[in-house]
Amino acid sequence: MRPVLVYTASRIGLFVVTLGVLYLLWPVNLLVLIVVSFLISGIASYVLLSKQRDAMSARISDRIDRPKPQDD
Image 1 (cartoon, one colour):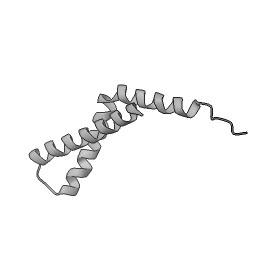
Image 2 (tube, helix red, strand yellow):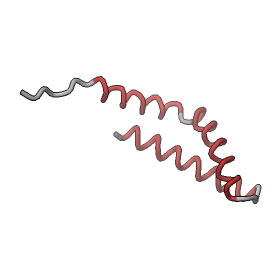
Image 3 (cartoon, helix red, strand yellow):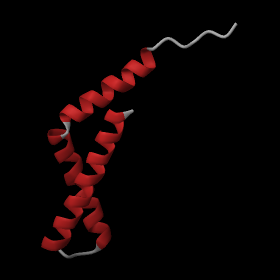
């Protein structure tokens, strides 16, 4: 569960930082800032968070591949 939380917190943090920087540099409509920061943080997370994404996908894959207990 930890890799999932680390990746999610990192994505949210990257979005908030991007939104804050864009707000300081480019004060326009808030909806426009949210959309642009969502796009920029998505692209940045693809590059910057690859290790966390791989760890999260390995954790999820292990959970899915684990055999389920049999009820008799």
